[in-house]
Image (cartoon, rainbow, N blue to C red):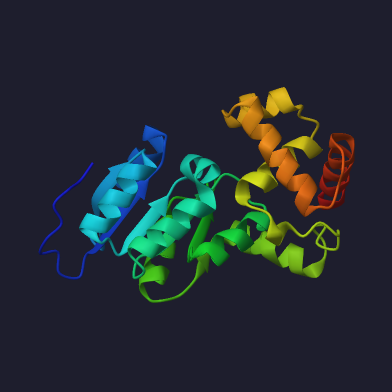
Length: 224
């Protein structure tokens, strides 16, 4: 949905994107209470998000967890190509640091966890407007554990080389989810899950599904 945002002075325009209406409503309600921000568009469709970004040229973009889980890195990159000056904040479904590296590499400047206090979002957006990077306290704690080696960071799987969806598939496999269960949990087809599993085998230099399953379980055990 497009909204007219002309003549806003120092008020920053924000585009809100997520597949789930309640998530969008929560973010929009929060921003409406803060005079520093003005929502210039909101949508559940990535194609519409690209259009709004091109037409409205928002200063800030908030991508919710459900859209990021599905469209992920590609959407971040696309929006950055359309409007390089925009700053992007991600709301992640996971507090796992392995989601941060590919997100930041793709062009996101800020990340919060879906379970964080809502005020982390406005604090983060303000920091982004100042030209800084931002991660919420919970994600910063996760990052420190990763750096200190207390979160399985010494395990040979290079998560930085994996997409957010590939990490998600690996994590769920490590928790015992079958291919069919993965398809249900991620709301994608079995064929799509198998495509992700094939890519994981190629990137991790594995040959069989059984090897991938063992490596996923070992990785999750190490992380925990």
